Amino acid sequence: MAPQRVFQLSGTCNNYPWGKQGKQSLAAQLCARTPGLDFTIEDDKYYSEMWFGDYPDFPARVLETGEPLADALKKDQETLLGKKVIEHYDAQLPFLPKILSIAKALPLQMHPNKELATKLHKQDSDQFSDPNHKPEIAVALSKFEVFAGFKPLADVQRIFTLPILSSYIPKDTSGDWSNETLREVTRKLLKADDVEVRSIEEKLQATSVSDLETVGAAHIAELLPRLQGQYGPGDAGSIVALTCMNFLTLDPLDAVYIPADGIHAYLSGNIVECMARSNNVLNVGFCPSADRNNVDLFANALTFKSHSKEDVMLPKQKSERSSTGKTEVYKPELSEFDMLIAGLKAGESDVIRAGEGPGVMIVTQGTGKMTANGQEFELKEGYIYFIAPGVETKWETETGMQIFEAVI
Ligand SMILES: [Zn+2]
Image 1 (cartoon, rainbow, N blue to C red):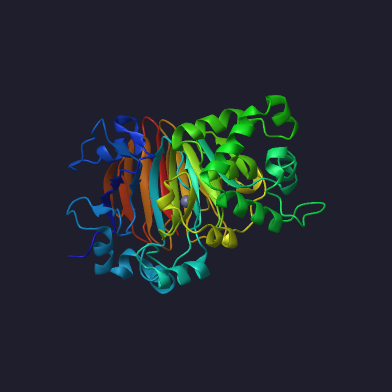
Image 2: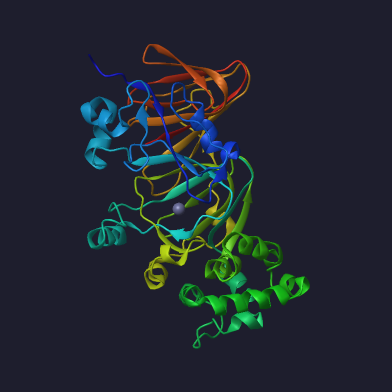
C-alpha cells in the first residue's frame, strides 16, 4: 500500500514549571482535543509546551497508528519529505513547531549558531544534543510579553548613567558605547553574585520613578517586582533583561524573530513557535543556578543583529502559495522554514498551492474541512496534520477558522 500523503498527527506536551496550570494552558487544551488520544489535563500540573515535529524529545505521532512521525517519514522519504529535504536537511523535518503557554519567564537564553553548536555537540553531546543552529519565530496567540534582542546602544548607555549601574561599564569606555561595551556589561552583570544582584535590585527599587523615567527606564518599576516574584531576588538575568534588552508586548498575530545567537526571554502568553530543528540552548538567568550555562561562553557568543524593537518584530506578508490572498506568511531570514497563517472568516476558503517540501499544520481556532490528495479531512481546534510535498490543500470553513502551517 502506498503511504498516505496527508495524515493526522498527535503532539506531545511537556511540563516545565514555567507553563500554565491545568486547563489554563492552551498547549494542554489543544493537545486534549486530539481525538482518541489518551491525554487528560490534570488541574495541579503545569503544561508548558506541545511539540509536534519529528524531534525525538517530545515527538509527534501518526494518530492512526501511534508511530513516531520520524519513523513514518523514514519509510518513504522520497514521497513524504521530497528531494530538497533529503539532499539539504539530512532527510528530517528541518523545522520544529510548538505551542507554548507561558505563565512565568522562560530562562534568559540564546541558541548557538551552527559553528558553536557543532563544537559544543562534540564536547558534550548529552547537553547539546545536535550540531544545528536554532533561529526561532514566536507568533502571539494572546497578549505576549517578551524580552528580545538588545535596546539601541544609546538607550542602554543612558540607563547606565544611573549611579548604581555605572560600575558595570568597562573602565576604558569613553564616548559612545559599542557592541563590545554592551558585551562586557552583559558579562559583568551575569557574573555578579546573588548578594551583589540583590543590592542592585534594592537600589533600583529605591530610585524614584521620575529618575527612572529620565533615563528611559520607567518599565523597571513595574517589571522588577514581577520578575522577583517569579525567580526571587538575586537573579542577574533580570538586571540584564531590564537594563539592556527590548521589552515588547505583542498582540495576537504579532510575531518576533530571534536569529541564531540572539538573546531572548519569553515572559508570558500563548504562542505558536517554530524553530530550526535543534534543541541547543545556553541559559544564563530565570532558572536555578545549577541550570545555568557558562557566562563567558554565553557572552562571547552574543551577536548584536537586533538593536531595537523594530529589528525584532517580524511582520507577516502575502503568501505566494495562497490562491485567494487570505493566507499570509511569516518569512524569517536565514532560516529553513516559513510559517503560513490563514485567518478565514465564516464562509471563506483558500487553496494552498503544493510546496516543494513537507508541511505540518495545526488548527488553533474554529472548525472546517480540508480537501487534499483527493480526500476530505475534518478540521477542528487542536487538529494537526502532516502534508507531503506536492500536495495542494483546500481549506474551507462555515464558521471561521485559524490555521498555522510550518513549511519549507
Ligand atoms: Zn529560545
